[in-house]
Each structure stands twice: as structure tokens, then as C-alpha cells.
Length: 166
Length: 276
Image (cartoon, rainbow over all chains, first blue to last red):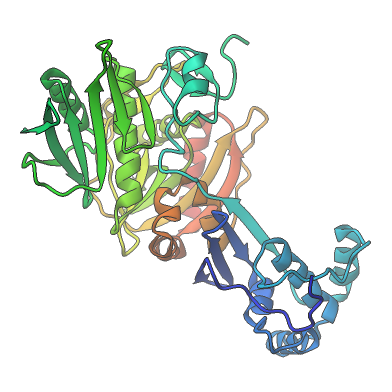
């Protein structure tokens, strides 16, 4: 792992859409979408491999009209790391501390919104939202490819997650 | 229909086109072929056309072939195989898969699993999966005066306007699983021809303890919440995100648990009236 003070954003396999005050990123390798709030988006933007963490903090502070600590930038970098949005893995600055403790420490001292990245998985296949059809439970488990839900609900004859036999 | 030979078998085929996507339907039995053609003609209400030329291009292929035991097996473009059944359930299933394939392959439209109604000249979109009460909520909204656009898909064009998918509502009554098709006329509602600009997007699901406490969410988080319901997002990602941004940017986006649809419907419309 690289504990770089010059983090580099990943670009391969990502589709990026800017929306008001946020950035949406779709990872085509994991089929996941991420929503970066303004703070997280700005940190990611400056992860160009040439700008250091303290420099990113300074830029963010100038932009927001308020002082920004290196810790806040590191919090964003941690999350970017977790969501595979950096080119190389970065060792967390907060190893050994709970996320809660970190948030409390940084949040109390910060006038700038904490970085937040929310994620959601996208349907993997064309027919992901179409239930398999069945006459009994075997049809569900033996379907080709196997259905993700294994019990056959006989009316209307589709595979579901819960047994209809209770 | 086009008739050709593959090996020693006579094949009956046609190509269905909807939203710019072509699905080839072929069968080795003329009766099965006619049944499949008839079923699929209703996949997109009246917005399907057929090409019977054997040379017609296609993106997706559905095959129905008779095995040695006399059973008719289907192969849906290599993604699913199974046994053909002459039942209403199978007809619905076949049309659902055709819609899913078309939605995934189209370059000019974005399909979102959602109910859609019209209110005061704007659309209200209610994204949600099957079996999550979309049709019930849509039926209650149109019962109290909203115009009907869809209980299954919000179909967005490249400019972010929503078009109707105005099949009859697929209702389940008294918690049952059997679907019954109900015309919106039975709720006293009109079908809206669209397209419309989206005024509100509502993420809601039934909860036994559910009370209506809507919270507005950002465009980014709204698009994120919609992702599981957006069919082409993995196949035409850039276009899908661009259209969703255009659409959601014009709308108020809210999320809330809800109780019974009958109680929730007027609250949705009230929220719209107070906010827009």
C-alpha cells in the first residue's frame, strides 16, 4: 500500500456525471454508483497525483471561505479509498480509531460539511428485475441461470424470496 | 411471418421493434409462433411494429423449439431458458422479459421501474420494484384525480421528459398474488398522452409502522436511490446518468415510508401543491 500524501484519483472504468453540488460516479467494474457530496467531490477533483493533502486542504478552505484541516481531507481520502475511487490504495491516517471518534473530532472543529460518499448497487443483468417463472421450487433452483430467489410462489408462478408454505 | 430453414427444421420468425430495438422471435411450430407473436404484440401497448422479412436485423433473439419429448423450450437471448407454458402468467413473463431487453438495449430512452401520474400538468414519478405496491398507489392517485401514465415504467427521452406506458394497471387485490388488469377508466381517470416534464419524484414504500414524513433529498441522492430501478444504467451508463440529471434537476425529490395507499395518495398531491 502507498501512504502517499499526493493521492491520485482513479479514472479507468468510471463514468462521471456532475449534478448540482454533487458528483455521481458509476463504477463499471463493480456495477456500483456513488454520490459524492460537495466536499468529497472537491477533494477527489484535486487528487491529481501532484497536489498534497495539505494543499488540498488549503484549496478547499479558500473555496469555502473557512479553514479546513488536513484531517478532513484525510477523511475524504479514506472514503474514496474504501469505494475504490483512488488509483492506488492509501493507508488510513485514522488506523486504530473508530469512524465515530474521527467524525466527532473533525466534525466539531469544522465549519465545512464533512465529506460523504453514498453508494448503491445497480442491477447486474438485463433480467435482474424479472422474476423467474416456475411450477415448483425445483424450477427456481434448477433454472438456467439459477434464480436468485428459490421458492416458487404458485400464484402467479414466480420465484420469490420467502416460502409460501410459511 | 418469415419462414426459413435451419438444418432440417422449418423455422417461423418475425422481428418485433420497439423504442429502436429489434427482437427476433422464432419458433419451429407455427401455432407456438402465432401465440408468441400475439403475446408480444402487447408488450409495449400499441408501440410495437413487426418486420416479417427473414433478413431483418435484430439485437435480441428469442427462440422457441420443440424437444424430442414434445416440450417447447424457450431461450431468451441466451440469458434464460425454460419451458413454454400456455398461461396468463407465462404471457406476462414473456412480455416482462421483452420489455427488459428493449429497455437495456435502447440508445435513445431510459426506462425506470416506476409508477407515473400527471398532476397539474407535471408528472409525478414513483420509482419502485415489482410487488412493492406501485400499482396500488397509482390507482389511489388516479382515483382522486391524477391522470394516468403508467404503473410500471417511467420512459424518459433524451431531454428528460417522461412518456406514458399506459397499459392497464396490473393490480393485486386483498394482498393476493394473482394479477388482474384494470383499465384506468374504472377509476374515473384519463390516460395522459404526454410527454411531460417531471415535477416530483417520490421514493416511498409501505411500512406497517409507516407514517408519512417526507424528507427532501438532493438530485444526486435521488438519482442514486433510483439506480436499482434504472434498467439501462449498466449498459448505457453515460446516457442514463445524463438523462436522469436533466429529469431530476427539474423536480422536487422526496422520500418517506408510507402507510396505506388510500391515505398516502392525497398527501402526495398536497405536498406537490405546497411545493411547486
